[in-house]
Length: 98
Image 1: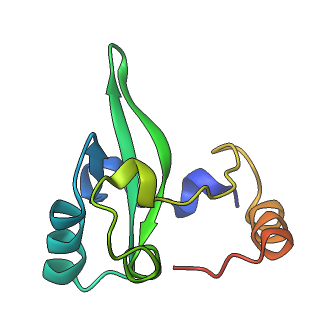
Image 2: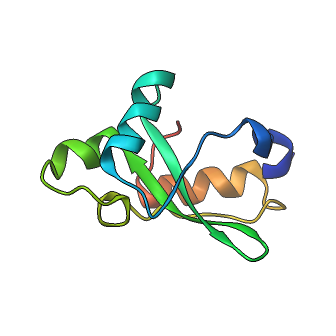
């Protein structure tokens, strides 16, 4: 099984966009009960993934309002990567599953 087989369909993924504010992201996190939300930026060809914004990011930086300054970098793998490979990347980076 590869990552694409386990991914949530794009139309069901809740994201916040750059530029954006803390309040926008916080409302998504609170409304949906999520602990984090992917950050994307619109391009001429669609959207590019830019990072992940978590509740911890918001708590650790209470004075920052811009999502770009709050979000963290998260390792990624290709859609064709195996789930075992993805788990290894997460383990190496110390990232917990959602």
